Length: 464
Image 1: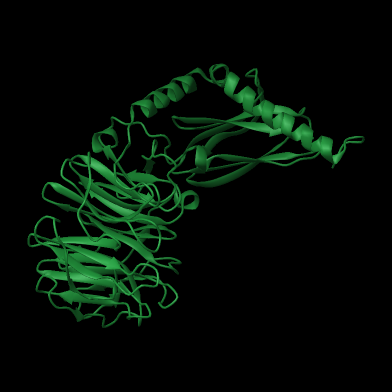
Image 2 (image 1 turned 90 degrees about the vertical axis):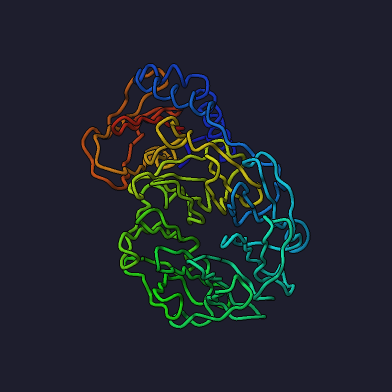
């Protein structure tokens, strides 16, 4: 409701004035405000900003406009499949022989390479048709990527590959030119047979993984295919059975599967799932980022650590089988979608959609030498929502990854506490609290959230 004599136009002007002032005041007085509110917070903020400066992602000299759906490691070489210029032209396979410092195109230009596998000294590349063209199939190189030969599944959209001993599996999707499913080759790709007994008809096999003698297939859907699920075969694909106990609401696709020691991770549009009993049952282990960062589109492992690339905002790391996750993506310019990950030569490589390839030393992320931009309790999990009116309220929302002592308080820009909203132990979960601003003058204020050793401050503009 507008005050008497305040027009709609002047109300907007007033709101913009407060917003601008709030932004300026926050930037100008941030350090002073932090010192007034809580000196230790200044130490925490200074410490992680110092580490943000020291942390370093490096962009590779590959086409930066490309979609990078896959990496492969073979000896001292790393390969990247890159799709450039939409439906036609550009892209192909790029190779680096110096741990990602420089890259060279090594073939399959005008081909959309979606997956890789290495077996018996050969490198296999799965590809799909570009646009409405006929194409795709499995290509093989026996000379470290210098040349490539189509060895099977011609004119088939191959979207995933996996190796189990001498067996090579290819996951495909349905198109006008073929039906999706799983195919098996036991002679290095020279011949293929369909091995899809037990899989849904016309399924989209978006991901494959091998754990011991068990092969897992993550399925998805497109205009032709059935919904998402996970299937398991213990007889080299002769038969498949659903392995989905504990999976929840996977109605589109399982984008990525990864094996980390005795654990199996599944990345889906609704988060991360973990199995520690070879797929018999699954548990959701994505608390702290799935509601904010979208689908999980890629994984990479290093020892007991697992990295997850997301389809909305960067890369996360877990060193405890997914019980907690830490963001490790600071410095990835304009990053929105991570499409592939790989660990090679002491570095993590990240393929992105329309932003090329990046790399970062593992030592900055694993081993306690790197302090991340945000932990599971973070600025993105902590937000404020303001309303407008004489008795306007501010809603403060946050999520806790574990039980902790929590305080939430509101301050003016002089550092004086105006309201203590929470000061008690809270259990793991999401919370929403309300601050009634009816007796507060319009202007800029600050809310501080503390949980354990984490502390964050956000500015709050109050309108009338």
